[in-house]
Image 1 (cartoon, rainbow over the protein chains, first blue to last red):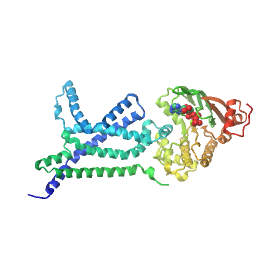
Image 2: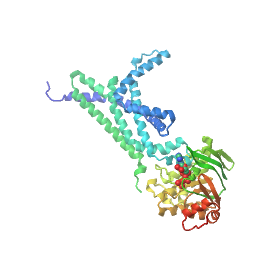
Image 3: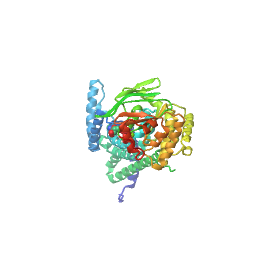
Length: 238
Length: 251
Ligand SMILES: Nc1ncnc2c1ncn2[C@@H]1O[C@H](COP(=O)(O)OP(=O)(O)OP(=O)(O)O)[C@@H](O)[C@H]1O
Ligand SMILES: [Mg+2]
């Protein structure tokens, strides 16, 4: 019997097991972000422009998401979505077993739902830093609203939003570890399952720890590069 | 060339414009004077649809639009006939001086990029910024930024340029350079509607001066008529306040 504190062989093997969960974690992150970015931006606009009903709806949605733990949101959506779906399926006579749906789909919905709310606030505060005057100047030279937003407002808004977007992305990556609650085959679940066999939990946790750290540091680095490129106009010297 | 009829505008219960009429001919330099809060900015903003009037119409040559109900298309069409110079410059901070000037040409008016940059360089040369094509707004002084703002308007070759207190956000020593540029473009025959507190500019450059108070035009005429022989009490009181020592009218 090996008497060393850590089982090195298991540690190394399991590292690759944990690594094999990275594609799922990244896929969920990318899909959730791809949905949450436009939705969050649109809802932020309804807040800034005080669009009657939507503004009010957004406010409640954001407070709900910010005021409850993600794990609870996961449990709620994971129980509510099948109920809604089975109702719809029944109505339209679709013969599909609701409870066989791949947890990946649930993960997409749950994490988009959560991240969009976070991004509403990120975009709202970032939009406020770009002066209304620039929007009016864009109108005055003949740009339409969408042209003004695309060419003048959003590029500047993004620069301010980028650090917070980075934080949101990293939080999202880490939050995907809660996917184990819905049997999502991601990093944490895979490593823990491997550890179950010989009770090598400490090794598994170390592996999980390292994988997330590499992931998050890479993402942070990429954001820094992007930020530098976007904010050229802010730091150039005369 | 530009005729505004009966503009009304309220913010909530506050009626800011109470039926303003305005007629400007090609090549006119019209200066609007008036105390703070008299509705000067609001008037310019309504003409350019940055604010929706409650009533009124604007005619540019043959084209007449209702200032209250104009469609998006009409708004865009009017904006293409006008340009606006803002009190606090409102340059696009993510774009260089040259890109600031070219933006409205390339995107708003669909001018080819190459041509747009040629036109924009000429406009920047005219305002004395040949050295600053590639500078971003934060690298420029207030006076330089406002000159880019003027170049941005001039490059569009609009029927009329609207100026809203173009020098009042500037340090005193930078006011001169901006007024000088405005004088030059006026001399070239640009039609201008200028809200300003620079009485010197009004006297020397304008061919028509309008005095506004409380949402109405109180008096209008040549600089001579307004500054030397004003008819209205309110005009005299205003001038005595802004030009102390120069005026001793009997009231
Ligand atoms: N968006 C707005 N909402 C509410 N009130 C407004 C708004 N814009 C302007 N006002 C009010 O309308 C009145 C006229 O404003 P305006 O800016 O047209 O005056 P002005 O003649 O340009 O004054 P100044 O010389 O100080 O620039 C002011 O009392 C102002 O408070
Ligand atoms: Mg004003």
